[in-house]
Length: 487
Picture 1 (tube, one colour):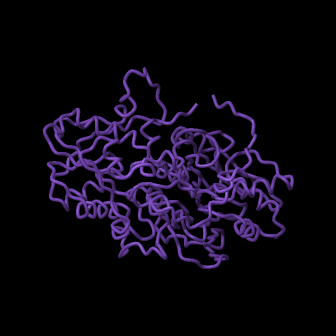
Picture 2 (cartoon, one colour):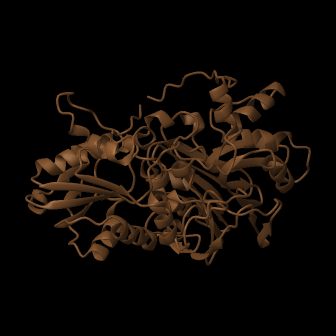
């Protein structure tokens, strides 16, 4: 059974990562490499589907990419020159094998494998309609809704059926699909989730982030545009834009935390944005200090930017153990710090007798922040100030990020002063919304037409959260699938 490490449970979780490749003789191996580069986006499960011109081949499992595709014999069985892959962190649906993507189905036109990054906000409403029509669901993931919508569409081609299906869904999605003669990539009309296109000497590649192109030696071509469908086939690359053009609302948290710092997303270096966020933090809320210390690893670039702008030395005052996975056995309940100390330890030589500025990416429940602060104080810090490279997280996300319900978000229940008291710091400050927008290259946040999806900070949802509203009103129905023994 997979269990979540308590440190990770107090962070916003990566959604999923997708990868697709067409026209390469080592499609499976390259897809596995691409998924490895996207491992940070989903660490609960991984799957891969290939097509060899005659039949599809599928391998999936719970755990990391290396756990499932580190065996050469597995890759050899995944024959073909086209493939799609997926790494998953469950935002809808439990951590069960039947939910591991890509999902595969036999259609009237042949086989279809589909991987999805994001979350459909009307999935339950559509699911009820489909069940009434006689559709048989095998998973609890919202991705299967898209599969059924494609299956029942009255249009003739795969492309037309896909467009028909996507016209009925709401929410966020970046999709990769594998058919007998193509690999297809899609972004939702608002472009909330990322997807990019790359070119190899042999073949074309689609990936959630550019770092996955780098690992397979693909050249970055461009980001897939919001509302665009890209078809990779023997004829090359074809683009279709079937949806009405609208202002994009890319997820700003990709820049703060989710994307790998070496990725370039929407034409902007993630690492550069994070350093600029740190500099904005220093300009907005500098405090007298001796050292600036990141909460590793996500706080490192912002801490570098803060230290440079504030003129305070940057030090690794907290050391991360990189060999702790998402599962572990808690030896006893007597040490309430075990969970954090397994992953982080204070560097006393740096902290003792110092006024410390801790830089982290976010505060969710606040439990981990409190333990980190206490650990730093026990190492001899005379003052502990915390600076956060995102605005306060006051609302839940419904677009593919696993956030707690709003009542469990610390910033939804307390003001900044109250939060500072609860986590035990001498001072606490978050970057402002305008400061965040400036770091991403905007002059500030335009309230009437914000450039990004920032609903977790503002409650300004760019898509109506249909299922959530139904749940609040008591109209939602519960799914009643069999339990699954995963060993």
